Length: 122
Image 1 (cartoon, one colour):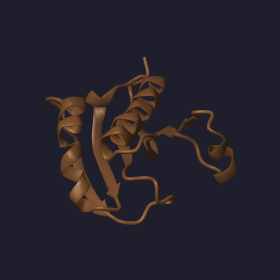
Image 2 (image 1 turned 135 degrees about the vertical axis):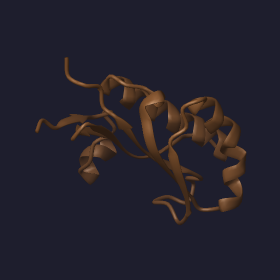
Image 3 (image 1 turned 180 degrees about the vertical axis):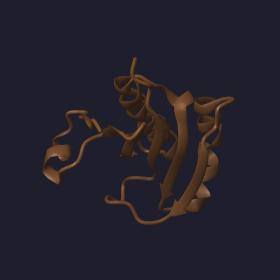
């Protein structure tokens, strides 16, 4: 089985020892991704932007997403993200879970982890 690692180039990837996504076993596994900004909506949009970049590098898109997990320190913030998520996934929503938990930095209001089907080799 071939494993392909997709690196975003963030210094934290090297420091912690992970990469943005791994293509293996017919899937694209995108690491938990936080976004930038002051509000949960801004962070949700920028996190999805980074995830979308990783999916494009793997040759797929949000339409190929099969599973997504949302991590939020405040569950009440999740509803603010619903319109953004609905817009992102459209008619192809993945199975989803939302977990209320602490994140690595108190400034983060959402972290998103996603799994998508990898494109089939030609």
